[in-house]
Length: 472
Ligand code: NDP
Image (spheres, rainbow, N blue to C red):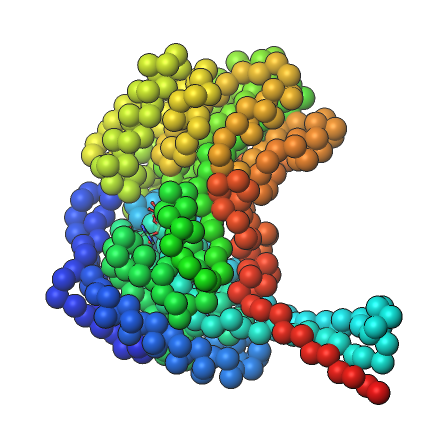
């Protein structure tokens, strides 16, 4: 495929291959952009911004809702493309497309809602006889950088709200998974988006991504990806806004009053959907010792039924990891945990270059990578606890803080946990992996800052402009 710059489809001789993670076949290739291409993209976004900011709220609503409808009409095509480039199962891919459609509809609605309010000047003695109000205005061209695991929906969490506000975008998708984003650009154009308002540039993160981050003409960088890259971006971004949606190692606490069967059944999905390659994948489970054995046996029974294999097969429950390097890293973290006293109770074996068994461990010590870092693979561990306070402490013992969960029937514990867990979202009797696209979503600590969800991100992507009038 070609990349989309300056209102045109653009090709380059140097190309990046997109590999099917399941079978290693080349799905397609995309151009590897140069620094000159980046300049062209930003220049185009500046021009696109001038056009976009003149559109009415209704125009923007129409473009985004039309894009949602077109995506709906082509959803199976997009789902199949996602399977090929990401390796997620066809069912997961259909789920991502369904969510992406909602993200677009939600963004379309925000185009109609972004408003200011009156400022009560005369609440201050010095404000007597004055009238004040503010509006929200677009900020300018935005740089968007997205990860491989939900290429479509996570990009739309940036593009949709940006267009709803009236900001143009230069988007750099993950090099492993640029195809659905390029395909979606056709939908945006067909929906009537000004051609220069969207630029999709393909190229390595280290050069094109960094060039985008540093570019002085971009007013904001919105990034979803790993913590390490997020920290690097914060170091080099210069004078511009930033929104950071980074990684995590989601915990879940199962108390002795919980519906243990329900918690275990959900844990199977939370830990192994997308082969664990989700920022809120369930990684760490803390279970009260009274219900530990029951939880573990229910969990393992559920995991045994996961069929690992070809993600295009309707029966497959878990597909491959994104590449061999990812699998080797995950395996080495399991080995490290075992060397330090953890026990594998299910799985642990490699099934192919990118396929591995869903793996369950117990008694993982708090100082190993599998506890402290983001495994981003099909691995979950279960540790027993005696006191609720200790479980909360263990859950908080992490540099990450995206989503956490508590399964309990005890209202006090639910509320206490909600208040004390240092996470951007706390789910009660539901997985930390659960998300609807309208909710405020984002992390504490090194899981990032700012909140996505169209209603919230339009505020990050706009600026307040105040007007004051002297009425005397
Ligand atoms: P990476 O951080 O490796 O890459 C994300 C994007 O950043 C890619 O487009 C990549 O380009 C680009 N990039 C890489 N290096 C740089 C750089 N130096 N400067 C600018 N851009 C750069 O993440 P993954 O794609 O591996 O995605 C997985 C990570 O994303 C996990 O940590 C996961 O938790 C997180 N994530 C967070 C979510 C959230 O909402 N909080 C949601 C989904 C994922 P290239 O591909 O060319 O290297």
